[in-house]
Image (cartoon, rainbow, N blue to C red; front, top):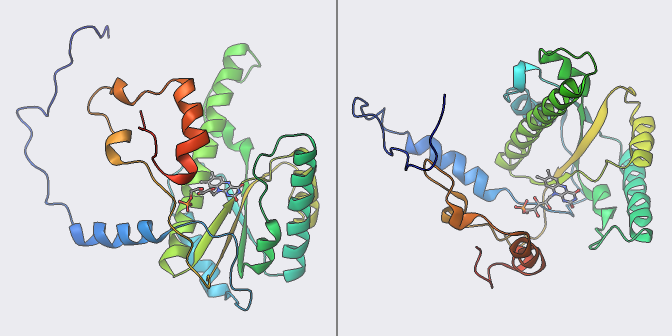
Length: 261
Ligand SMILES: Cc1cc2nc3c(=O)[nH]c(=O)nc-3n(C[C@H](O)[C@H](O)[C@H](O)COP(=O)(O)O)c2cc1C
């Protein structure tokens, strides 16, 4: 189909469409309450314990997540051992120290909070499931590009499941910490060994959760008008690299002092 982009596209629904069912605001409000409650904590009440049944509730939410080609490319390792959490915290600290030494870490994080988390789930991804997407896979350049797309789909799928787990934990009253800084080769190898994860699989992130003694202030979020376009992309909301630089340096951490466009 040849789409003439110069002409304005017709807006609005088809004249034959009728209004759908009245949205169920009660269910939406309940969901939004959980969404709004979710926020990242990096230190928890260390005197807490998470039961196996609670872990199952959380991972059951992840299990129901959508995934590309229904590949379900995830596995969840529940870490109950305080010794393992202690070793994980040390491994992440060491990996961060290596990044700091190379000048690759602007804002170091205190990973000792890992040891305070009552709940710990390591998210493992099976990228071999890119095979679930039919393609030629004969090693051509086109195949490689197709494979890169399939990898993105796998990652999106695992993110969907991980988000579901975080929201489930939030709905149970916990605060959560999504830790993705496990990507360095050396750290991957160390975590694989610690948790006996098969070499073919990737540790994508670590989910920590627990109760907090004090709520952290909510982080600033963009306004809906800044992230929404109708029918075609609203170029008012397209930012140049210079504007992104300014935003990263100034607005993101402390909220909007600068106009956001
Ligand atoms: C994909 C993803 C990766 C993240 N990785 C890390 C991480 O490696 N270390 C960390 O301390 N926080 C990490 N976070 C947490 C973010 O810093 C946090 O979500 C963000 O600052 C917004 O704050 P909020 O979660 O309170 O809304 C990650 C979050 C997501 C969704």
